[in-house]
Image 1 (cartoon, rainbow, N blue to C red):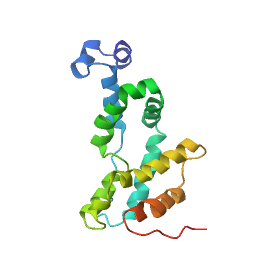
Image 2: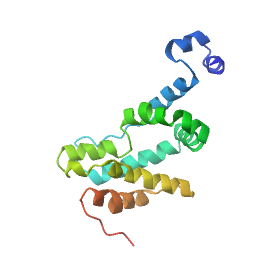
Image 3: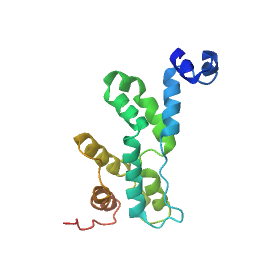
Length: 166
């Protein structure tokens, strides 16, 4: 807390009024840096909104906050200490996965049966983007994000596969 107070040019006691320890400060900072996916106003483009949600995930994953979360979750000691808190206090409060809010919005409007929105379906896009990022190379292109939507997410909610482009 001393280092945080020094960088913030504030007394340490001021920090303790709001946060009990450095982990609390980090979780609060990550919460405020984690984007919330939202359907387009007047949403009627499920495919486009899913692609935008995955693009938002890629942008966040490459941001300082996303890289900090990756470092936390890939280090066994910090993951054991913080993963549950990250999922409960950051991700769940900001919509869960990057496609869940969009999918829930369209399910609520009858675009597909709500019972098809399972935890696995909500995680498909995020899991495939994460795999792409872990495998290395350049971040996924919009065409690759569209392939994830067309070949994995939409078929999982009963909206049929689109033919892959050559």
